[in-house]
Length: 293
Ligand code: MN9
Image (cartoon, rainbow, N blue to C red; front, top):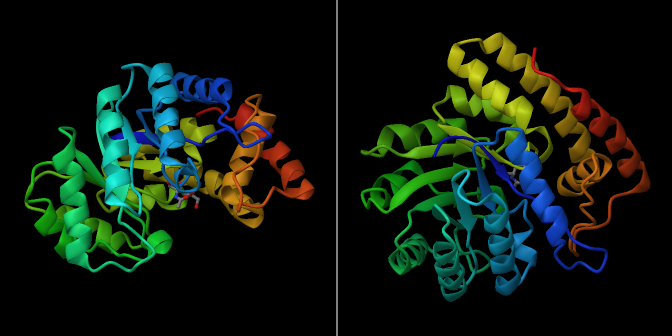
């Protein structure tokens, strides 16, 4: 498992129920672009604002649509270990390649409690774990020293590093004494992550611009850094525009303009403004027209 993985969005109907048909379309759209894998039910998938039952339903739909074509990671992170285990077991039964989890949040758990949470999850299944490090989202920073200790256990496969701290990313690779797969988490610094040693990237904007990031990955590995930079710069113009109006809302709007009806984000995410929705039309046109040089 490496390369470019789409952190799948979850399309909703207007009444906020899961839009199964659009979700299957989105999976197919990404596979056609050549995506290397899927990360299902994470931040981008609005997993934190869905019930465990709904999250398992999304796992089922996505696996049904993708089959065995690419590796798939199911995000099972939750504030409760029992919920996380329940989702992890479902993911394993459905045939997912790996599970992933953010650290439990809200109560500011100390590291030993977080360590035990991960141990309890990996002990409940026989598929490996990708630790989701997202300090900005859950207030816990997974350091390279913690990682070195945790990854002595071979059931830990990789880290999804959603942080601008690329020194930490590099330190994971250096301090963990066995091979570890590190995925860069912020799309706007995908090339930065790759150059600091990331094996791949998992991100939300790949839902609609997987082609650009697959190309960045290739150019980087061919040593064509300037070409990779040019594509990253183009993508970042789009991402900067999205940050103005709300990233997930904008991603859904772009895909809706591209022909996959994604609906709204779940409350408490606010609906996208009219202005934002209009601005995303231009992004959708730009994405439809984009071709690798
Ligand atoms: O999964 C995403 N992380 C979060 C990764 O949303 C927290 C990223 O893809 C960002 O959405 C993206 C925009 O900032 O880099």
